[in-house]
Length: 185
Image 1 (cartoon, rainbow, N blue to C red):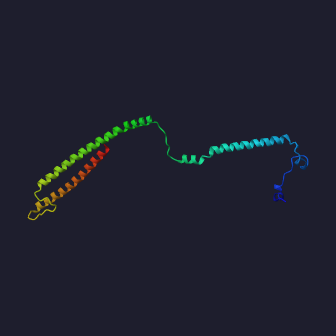
Image 2: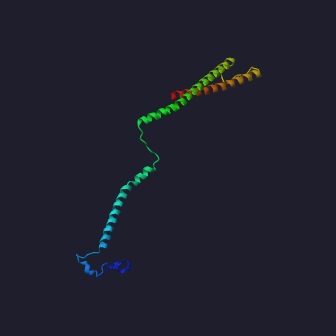
């Protein structure tokens, strides 16, 4: 006994034939209802259509994971011909070149101003050196001088040190500006 026959829901269904089912089992010449034949043919057509639709859908979506990954990327590459690139390059050059020339002229003016300032500071330092009658060492011997002269000498020494520091700073700025000007050209 089959386990499916124990449940009423899995039991075989009633026959569609009017007579006893044993009459039709072995009969090869039995004639089926034309409606049944049409129903079977319609069912086969539906199955064929469903199969073709499934194949078309499978062909259209088999590449979906790759396409999804491609669409997730943010970079898009566009192929452009060389004439378009040349045209855009010329437009960009026309747009940027005046600004670059203006910046270069400003840098040249700045270099000239710094050079002038450096020359002024150098002459000032030389003037201070000529005025000093004391040795060039940093520590000045003030023994035997009046307090006023000693104070004046100390002020001149401090002024000289400040000017030397400022001169060194300006030289470094001039060197940096000259280097940046050379790199731009």
